Amino acid sequence: METPSTTTTAAAEADGSSAAVARWTFTIFQRFQHVLDKVTPYVLHRWIAFFCIAFLYVVRVYLVKGCYLVSYGLSFYIIHLLLGFLSPKVDPELCDSPTLPIRGSDEFRPSPAACQSLNSGALVLSITIAFCIGFALTFSSLFDVPVFWPLLIFDWIMLKKAPSAESERLLPLSENANASKTFSFSSVA
Figure (cartoon, rainbow, N blue to C red):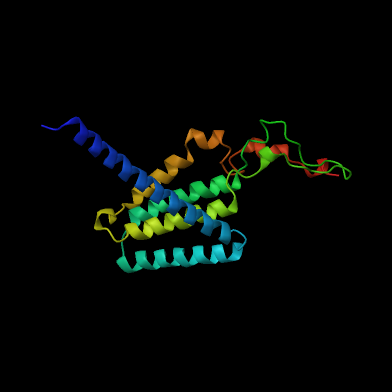
């Protein structure tokens, strides 16, 4: 039978080990953030490192001749990140942000709400981490699942025709008749 003192000792050891793990993860996060802060001014170097990692991933998938499911998921994640990078935080038509200048004397000053929802540093970091995770997943046979290409085409068609795509204004201009009618060169002075 355990005494109350041994129970509290075990609880204290568990608290001590969880505190040690918390300190260790905080230290790792701090070092990672320090490296990110040091690399921030070097935009070209970040992109070169990203393309090297992406090239290693492509070579790995080519040599394995598989892992298409991982590549498929990775491509969807990259498209999601690129849409976040290219789209503004807030839809300009729904907020009171300034419009483009109409007269020569007008000056365009975008509001902070019109900024990108994902900056280039976060984009490069997220895509690089995604490629690293994808590269690690190529070493497991669990993720080497063959993909039936007609299913991919069906999936792409269903995503293209999804109602959320129309509400998010992600359809091409040829399919969005209202968008092509609203712009006119005669309104620009």
